[in-house]
Length: 101
Image (cartoon, rainbow, N blue to C red; front, top):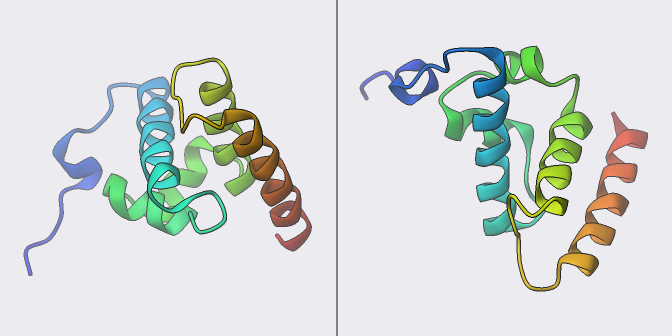
């Protein structure tokens, strides 16, 4: 199997671009499987980076998912038509993850 290029061949020019790209990938994954099943490992894999690379830009999983939530809440990424219920479910999931990690 051919080796994948870091960042899928599109290395970000600066840390802000890297964070935005990882948040975008997070949003795509959440749209597909929901917050309960989304994982940092899945985000890293789809972005073409290691989990350690994600940790360079986000303190932890909660930081990454909260950032994605804030982008969504500001209308820059709309997960679905039931956004209020969606965000309440996310908050509960993130609180549970904080207790586990």
